[in-house]
Amino acid sequence: MEATGGTEELVSGELVSVAHALSLPAESYGNDLPLTQLSWPDIEMAWAMRAMQHAEIYYKLISSVDPQFLKLTKVDDQIYSEFRENFKNLRIDILDPEELKSESAKEKWRPFCLKFDGIVEDFNYGTLLRLNCSQGYTEENTIFAPRIQFFAIEIARNREGYNKAVYTGIKDNEEKEASNGGDKGANSREEEEKGANRGGEKEKTNEREEKEKEAYKEINKSSETTM
Image (cartoon, rainbow, N blue to C red; front, side, top):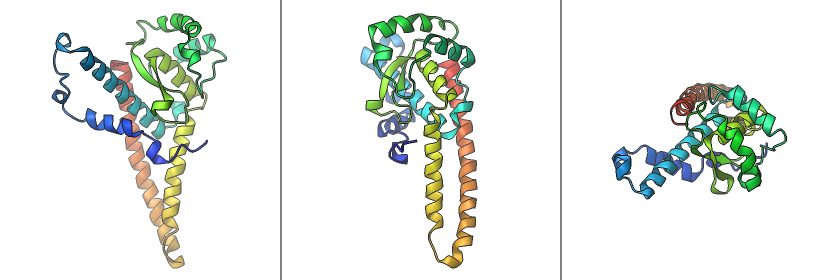
């Protein structure tokens, strides 16, 4: 996997800002008003916040858990089967926007998407989709897509091993940081430091497992309720 610029690029600054905003009370946005009293800018902002929250949760999940074993919906098998039946040769590691947004592409995607009306909740709701699956949700690497299109491509990326680039990149960075920490000190303390590093790695592993559980819980809750 080609490195994507270190841990600072795992979640873009824009996503970090959104994560902070999401921690604020609802009244901070004025979104506690009934829908009929919201202006279009309010609605657009609420939609953008929701899409960014979903993107942040999903990226955190594939960074923490081997994506090959993830289950995003209750009908992953059906989505993947239908997707590859209809888009057998579509390249998904690096998407060509024309394969999603051109008029001819839309004609092909429309019947696929409509198959999941009533099966996947909010199947046509707007989400953010990465063009290059080895990179994060940056402005240059992100396009808007219907939720079922997001599911189809990301489920395929997970099952076919493309999203593993993100997961292994995180693990490699953590191992390098642990290794660099073990190089400090005198030779007489190397064994002690290695032991400390192993202990630190175990703690990181435990913390990562907790994060995996939380992230998995969030993405499944999001899939079942708002997706």
